[in-house]
Length: 180
Image (cartoon, rainbow, N blue to C red; front, side, top):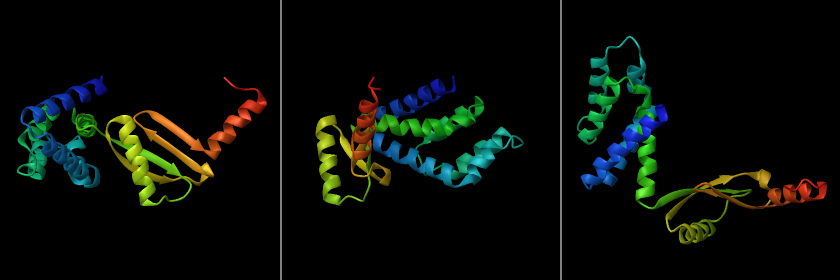
């Protein structure tokens, strides 16, 4: 039930952003609010403290964000707090970014390699993925020496595994007769 509420609130906020033709500004605001709430535990601590009255929680959020983010975010915070959904604030902001990435035709791919790849090679992989997915692809490079050699790419629920580790595991299954 909680997940459904997060989806509904984030979709409603995103619809407001589209309606006001301010999707980029709203996404920047959502990211900055999320950064403040995740790193600066002061505001989140006030929101989550059971002994602090609702009005003081709302005042803390207003003090932290009024004038810095669109008013729709403040209204959303008030609504979530009044409905007892304070735990969903972070989820709504995170899902807003998912909606933004889809709207902007952007995605993030995780590129696993046993060594750091040259930036030209990473750019080439990003260009290939962009053409295949018809989206702008941002690469997040991750060093994984267990791959031995080769690459592994995870993007939009797909996994492209061209690593020696994967090939060895496949060969092992074939030799043992455990191919499914």
